[in-house]
Length: 50
Length: 355
Image (cartoon, rainbow over all chains, first blue to last red; front, side):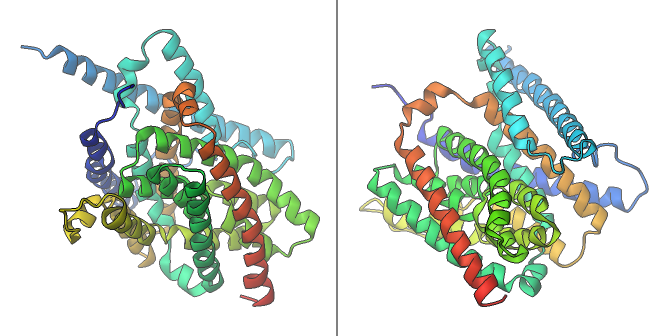
């Protein structure tokens, strides 16, 4: 029988361990955008998508 | 001493991340270019949504990487879920809970009816066709709540496999596009009033971008109602995830000698949902200006573009084929049920009851 590539531990890490990393990065981005908004520095990345 | 496997993994991660970043820029430019072209030709909204462009580009690069045997080297960078979770946290800025409560009583009623009916229908048909519990939970959440975001949240709660998430996400994206184009046309043919049409789009189409797209094609009033209905469904992610984690701990994965505890539910609960709720609470209290919301919306699109590109990179036809036809039938039947029921519920809630 073919062995499943993902072990139970890898699964748990992938789905739950990365969660906190996403929260930290997500909130950090919100904070950076908030700080940018109270300064007058233009951010070239905003508004590229239609 | 240098640990070679780890060093090459790290190198693959960084090279891959740079490649995904560049791809996101290409996708954004393509999206902007195609939209401008459609506007210039007087054809209205671009029917090629950016998720589709991202997946298609990802598939193309996937083929090149596999042909050149470099796919495995860059695999550590294909962090689809991480990109999606970051995008969803940023998307929280668009979810104004006070606006839902003040304008969207009808939307909330419709969302509650739709989410519970479609979830249990999908679960029932999945059980009949013997689809495994995890895939069933991810599919039921995706069709009933709000597509990719709900699929990711549910996958965390039930600890689903990566290929199951990729499978459902691909289905969500490929189903949303024809629905986005066909539903406004059918609504027009049936002569549906704008609010009923909007409620139908919001209650049925799985991805938020496609809901807004369908609303835009139909008209401004339909778009406003569609967005409120969709936002109401999005707001239910946290509750649905909590209930799924609870169900899997108490029923599906319970060992005879193990007592379910609050800690186990907390451990299982996807924490990014807390980030999403936290950002939407900040938005609801009016802490973010319109410029901040718009900037966060753009950044969430960047994160989603990276995620959808990664989905294309990871997609393996052989792996998906191994899952068989049953999940596809479940998803198809659930989508048809969702479409018909959403029209009926929208008609009653926004037409007969006059919300």
